[in-house]
Amino acid sequence: MGLVNLHAVLAKAQKQGYAVGAFNFVNMEMLQGIIDAAVEAHAPVILQTTEGAIEYAGIGYLAALARTAAATAGIDVVLHLDHGKHLETVVQALRHGYTSVMMDASDRLYDENLSLTQQVVRIAHMAGVSVEAELGRLKGIEDTVSVGDAQATLVDPAQAQDFVRQTGVDALAPAIGTSHGAFKFKGTPRLDFERLGQVAHLTGIPLVLHGASSVPAGIVNKANDYGAAIKGAAGVPDDIMRQAIRGGICKINTDTDLRLSFTAGIREELTKHPEGFDLRHILGPARDAVKAMVLNRIEVFGCAEKG
Ligand code: G3H
Ligand code: 13P
Ligand code: ZN
Image 1 (cartoon, rainbow, N blue to C red):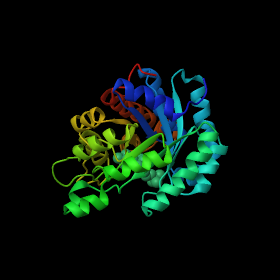
Image 2 (image 1 turned 60 degrees about the vertical axis):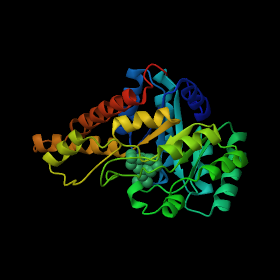
Image 3 (image 1 turned 60 degrees about the horizontal axis):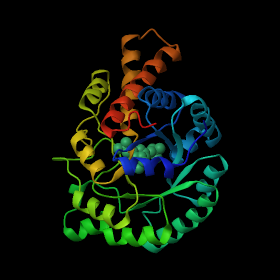
């Protein structure tokens, strides 16, 4: 089976009330850890690469890895461009067989975001490729100090309705209080569920949660035990994640959890075997750590046996 597009995968998720994991990868071992977990759980999976990953590894290598994985996986696999900031990257992704792209012009003026996304939808849909867009800024909810500030930072539901109507995007990422990375909440974790509910109601399309890593204390502690210095890390707790899924989130973006798992695995191996230098003995356990993390996320997202 080849790669499938995002629209089909998310339509099923929205109907049945679960979310599909969208996992970032930058190399073969990360991709294999992700795909092995999805195959074992028989879960659909979205493999995604940022512009930074493309710059690091080369789009040809990344696309070939994903195609190779999808060919024998026996589950639904999507290859998605995450946070495409430039039209040129979107076109490059289409040429390399990506089945979904994100046009992220959320840092531009609303009208610019709208017209760029409209252009991307026109060309991507002609190629049978799905489109995700973003509204609002990904910023911790406690960083918004007033109602006016929240309005400027978090998604505006009425604007989301207008945006979806005018662009025809397949999925929308509304900013509701998450942020990228390992330091999401200073105090009690919370998201703006009222806003999420309004966006889900007014748009009717599958919604995407960015900055959704759980940042498990166990993994952070393991990394720190083996030499990392990661202090004050906090992610999205599983009960909040389940509430978000009930509120209309169908695609969950996860990168930090995989980075933490992979590097904690490398640190452990290098510390326990300082004499070792066979890459397979170092990266193999790191790949297994990514697989374990993805299996954990699939369980929380409720997408096992949906592949
Ligand atoms: O937005 C997703 C990422 O976690 C940031 O990825 O460092 O590859 O741009 P990047
Ligand atoms: P995390 O940093 O929470 O993993 O978010 C990843 C993400 O949103 C990728 O687009
Ligand atoms: Zn993101």
